[in-house]
Amino acid sequence: MAYEHGMITWADLASPDVEAAKPFYAGLMGWEADDIEYEGQFAYAVFRHAGELAAGMGKQSEEMAEQGIPPLWTTYVNVDGIDEIAASFAANGGEIVVPPMDVMDQGRMTYGLDPTGAPIGFWQAAAHHGADRFNDPGFLTWSELTTRDPRAAIEFYTTILPWTVTQMDMAGLPYYIFVLGERPVSGIMTMDESRPAEIPSHRMTYFRVEDTRAAVDEVALLGGQVPVPPFDTPQGTAAVISDPSGGTFSIIDPAPQA
Image 1: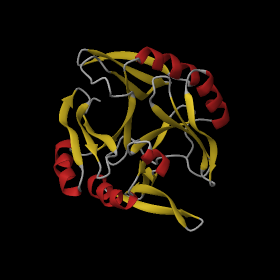
Image 2: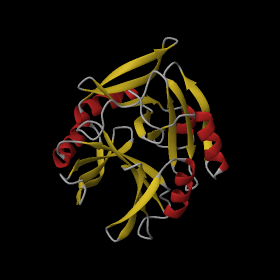
Image 3: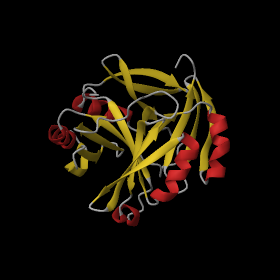
Image 4: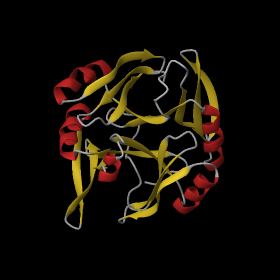
C-alpha cells in the first residue's frame, strides 16, 4: 500500500508509561499492541484494530519530560522526500526539532513546530506506509490544528504541501479545511479571546468510535479522564480524552453526512 504525497497517514503517542497506556487503549479503542524491540530494548509499539494497523506508541524521552512537555499524540504527513520537506519547513518559518532520520527499515521521519508553534511530523515510507484503514471505528479520522493565527498556518502549509484550503463556520468562528486534491485532510480551529492565553497552538488527533457517549463512560474505569465531555457538532458527537499519563486526543462518532 502506498499513499500519496501530502496525505495524513499515521499518528503516534509519546508516553512516559507505555505499559499503563496499553490496557487503556485496548479497553477504549479495542487496540492490541505489538512491541518492536531494537538491540534488545523496547523501541515502539504498533497498535492494531482487528489485525489492521491503526496507530503507534513510543516512550517519551527523559529530556521531554524534564522540560515539562506533556505526553503527546503526533500526526504524520506522508511525503515523497523527508530531506526536501525539512528544508522547506525551515525555510518557510518552521522549526525542525528532530532532523531527518532513518527509523530502522520502516522509513524516514522528521518532526517540527510550524510558525504558530504547533507540532507536526512527516514520514517518508519504506517498509511502513501508515495506517491500514481510516474513518472506521478504531481508526484515525481527523487531524485539527488549533491556533490564534490561522492565516499564518494557511500560508505555511499551502506553501510546503500540495494543500489548498476551504472555509466554513464553526460556532460562529471561521473553520478552515486543508484539501489534497478533492480529499479533506486536516482542519484549523481558530482560538478566540475566550481561550486562556497560556494555551499554545496545538494539533488534535481524532479517532472514530461507534458511540462517543458510551466510550466516555468507560474512560474513568480505565484510568483516564475526560477534559471535554461529549458535545454535539454538525460533524458528529465528539469528546476530548486524556489517558492515564495525560496523553490527550479526541474521539468522535461522525454524523451520517459528515
